[in-house]
Image (cartoon, rainbow, N blue to C red; front, top):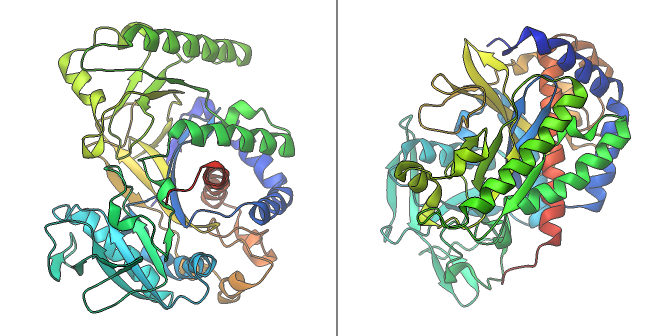
Length: 452
């Protein structure tokens, strides 16, 4: 796999930003280490990044990632080390994990994700079994994944304040790979076991605007650390509430929000000599899977929406009605892979970057949401044979080593010597940006009230 190309006109700006990141690598890694002493990272997460050359920033943070099957299996050893740390934080004595997936039993690609996640945890030394919330799963059920692997779902049961399976399997740690878009079911409430991510991380209570409010704090501090313009890594946003897309209620209020944000972006573009036309992304403040998202270039774009677009915006996953949206500065994606628009997606466990992939869409433009039907995934393909075994071994040491883009600490001399080609550098930069979002998520979760 070759590195995606970027529009020639913006290549110098991107390279200048990468040089700043590399020049401040020691300070950046020391800063992250300090932050992880202050805040507990989420168990796992994935971050979507957009790259226009003059601006490179996270646009979404998923705390229940569902694409582990799209990661390069060569990175399994890295993911297992990260999983060991993540589980130890949650339950130091854990030797087994009860994994609760989504109810998509017909989505074989999601099932492949469950299989891949289970394999990571098993290679980390844990017994893993799958407890399902799906009412149709009333007995052990073997399902075949997209790549013809098999997973076994079992009905999730509860006795007193403990979750268990029919044969009594009831470990101290429960791992959710279900984002709770449909609400927190009673069976998960007030249990005595550790449940990660916590229930408050689900879309029942979590809001994207809360995350990006925390990200504002992180981005501002990071920008001061390395002396850059915060805007280059942080999209503007506003929230608009009281909407009913099916009846056009709140339409003018949304148009005013769009107009205000577009004017703010244009003012910034003018100050920097950027000739692109500003746009914003309007998306549901709660929800995932790329649902309830639209690109907007003018306030008129949200006035008088036709039935198709109203239906698209009115509800998201699990039929959750949309009454509040985040209006976020749009970032052009000037990266392409084989002439198709692409964006990097970075995966993390605990405070580790464990890999990622490129989301590629041949049918979408540079100003559109790529998380849509027709997208393809291209795993990062760096060969782990290039990484010295002694570097991997340093993972568990107090001084974490940077191994390609996959580790958090400062690079060892051996690895630093290998970071000479642009792919290593670009992927490291992606990892830095992703960890900024991970830190924002940690702050966000700390500030949220717990759900019993």
